[in-house]
Length: 64
Image (cartoon, rainbow, N blue to C red; front, side, top):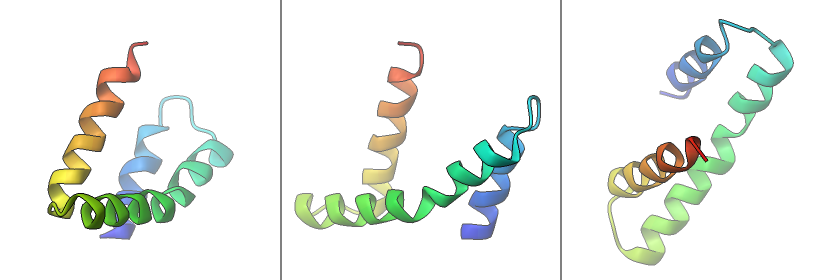
């Protein structure tokens, strides 16, 4: 799963590829997962629901 996420993130930089930016983003996976697990535990919600909420928030703020 993590390899797949890393691969997807890496591809997202394909147009203006930068190994530094790509690597930095892939390395954030660990902290993001810890955040998902912590929030799921605190809010007593499934991790998938928390991840969806976080993704929606990121997309909502992307244009700002």
